[in-house]
Image (tube, rainbow, N blue to C red; front, top):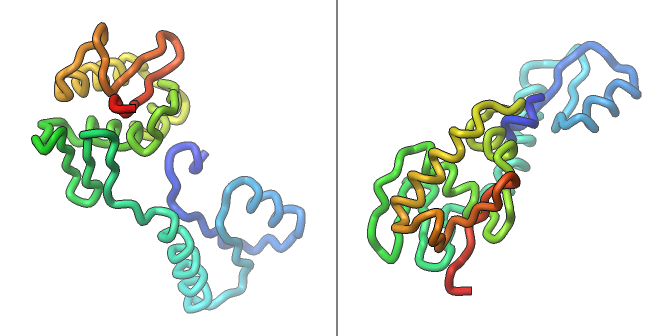
Length: 162
């Protein structure tokens, strides 16, 4: 369930030392497994190691799709050099789509990844935010430039210059 809403590293600390249980927990998404007894220094070292490994995969701080540029550290988006006036959640939605250019993303996946709602929710929330993004990008649903919707399936962000 944790993996459905976040990529945060997971270290399981337990007294259970059954090999089948360890394999099951690691296969279910845990990043490490520590068996009691252990010292706090041992646990801290394991946590540092997991954080080091997880930090390597998220080094991107800028995303560029055509004239759309997102600065992930500053939480700012620009289009052709002009700043976009969008909410924090709309920025997260835009960043998620921009990190997967051309990929059709379902509303269910967007709700899980952007809104942290793994079991669905109000999919109209996605529609409303996509609508706001379209307005900020100067486009409409009937004349899309960046945001293309496939009715009943999802939305994709594309580079209009390609």
